[in-house]
Length: 343
Image (tube, rainbow, N blue to C red):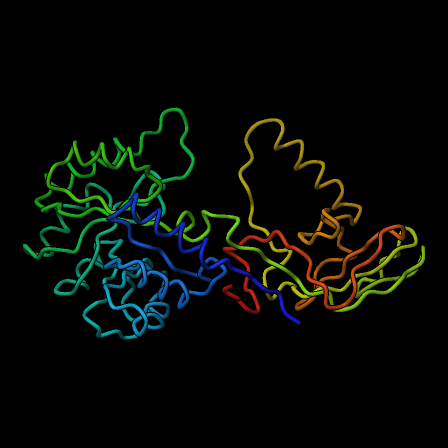
């Protein structure tokens, strides 16, 4: 029985239409696990929005959407010569994030990535004259700035974007289009006033696909329920039950991304205190699961397995019957659902 993502199709589509209306120049992003929906599902949804471009992560993802999206497909991964499958479709737009990539892609469609304050990839300001020289007057599809999410007191991503427009212009480029991220509509409107003649296109993923939380719900199927007594050994690691209770086996394990976490940046005393408490409980093998029963998240009986998770319920709690579906609070960008049901 599966780990399922249920989608209220009407609410999901209504939210996407609202975002598209507010951001008419948006470029939807569909990459990785497709925010839990899969990349082809998002590509078809983007086609229904009437947008002219779609951004994907890799060349393989680009190949998977060419048949279900008729517009341009932008590959966000930096281009590396001979490191991707050959794609001859004229709708493919690659990302050049180095001088070498600019030289290798000369004569082909490309977006030049500028190294923003994120400092992840892209050309530096000093690289720009050399890039312009390498292109010999070729007009590129645009330039991109991937901007940070968090904004310290000194950060001003809109001003940073204006400085890049100036640097690109001084290097000899005609700056007709810049792809940006994590800027508000008001900030983009300000950029359009500050840089007339330049089109600013926001690349949007999370806000577009997951911005209406009431439209999506993850549920895990209960596969088995059985009683345990205090001292009984449980699971692969044979930990002992602390008291009488129930073990509930549910669909969803590490293969689907359950229990896997990325490091987090913590700021402030309260988040740090919560993390210390969570770490202290984990040190004595007590970890809260993402699965809920009777309105409360339940404890893992032991770490998730590949395809299933084992939960522990106290004896006084009436356990769910096999076949019941438990709500699951999962990170959509790292969860691979067994099925996605639109309803």
